[in-house]
Image (cartoon, rainbow, N blue to C red; front, side):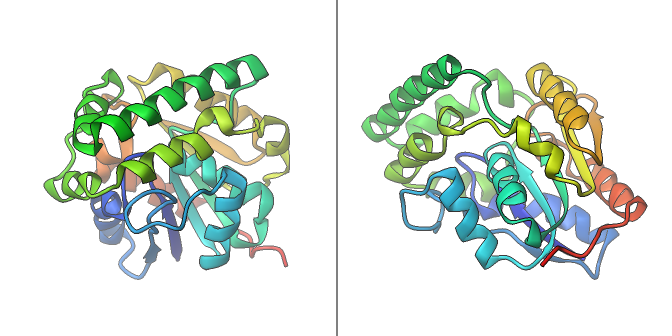
Length: 247
């Protein structure tokens, strides 16, 4: 069983260490690929839009079960709609298919540009201190390795990620999701009400989607309780039949 894992904003491939370890306990024969996303870690040359980045990532990957968290989940939805040949199943953690109106997207783009400017002005460490203090991450206790890797991100990389792949830049994919007919697990934390609602909407829109809500968890549910997350993923993966990717 092949897993391809796409991390969230400010993270790196190191952020998957605990979920991968928990998955390996249940699936010792599984293989894992977790790239640094565009603008993060040793990630690909910037700038990449979500559609461009999805193509590059899909071309590097082996077909398998994809897991995407937040920003990584948004890239993953583009992979699923643009490159279904590499997707056998999906796990979407705290993911949206985009903002519905042009006014919402413009407002978000403007906010992301302000945020990007602040990262370049103040530096990564100062930004991470503010970012990790958001209520969204109140339950998250990142490992020392994960936190150190986040600090190695560049201010230019994070800023350009917001400018080219932020939620405001994403054309909504809601109308396209009916065509993503593969087993899909949607995971949200019970204390993240916004993404619980978005998760329910994804589940209603995607033909083979199942929604799991992790109790006493927030936005980064897979990191807050990696063991429980792995249990949900493995139990679901064992219960569904994943098709061979189309050619």
